[in-house]
Amino acid sequence: MSASRAVRSLPDEVLQAASPPSALPSMAAWPRTKAGTDGPNGSGPSSARTSARIRSLDSEVRALARTIAQAAVEVLAGTRPAQQLSRTLDPGCFSALQHRAALTRAFAARAPGGQSRLHRSPMVRSVRVCAVNDGVYEASLVVSEELRSRAVAMRLEGSSGAWRVTALEIG
View (cartoon, rainbow, N blue to C red):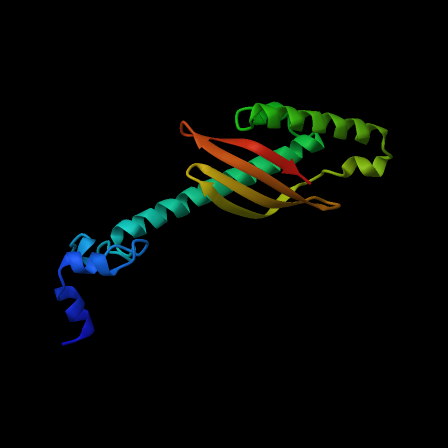
């Protein structure tokens, strides 16, 4: 008799007593399902739907982070009004972005002619997102401009069906 057949023929109490408490539940504790459906290793149609839903959410957050980062750098350049980001940014992030944009415009007004093009034509080069908790993501982006590249980091939190940036750092 093979070892796997011997294990399956043992009573559930013996299997549970033999395994340490931190171990996975015994095979007898897993629900009986048809072949190809969810099992102990997370394989099957249900886990495929879950991973597809996670990939869809990741791509949604990635696209949103890309849009917000591009818009934030355009606000710093003075080519976009900051008010357009008021719904997606936390009030603290929004006021910090407005303040930095005002400082950037004041600096550009005093700088020689070549420095005023510092923030022209921003383009997002890469986006990385990471799920921190349910409904909380952190994103890091690289935004290239004519004269330099910048790092942008943000924290996005989802609530009531909408995403809001609660932390925004632009290098």
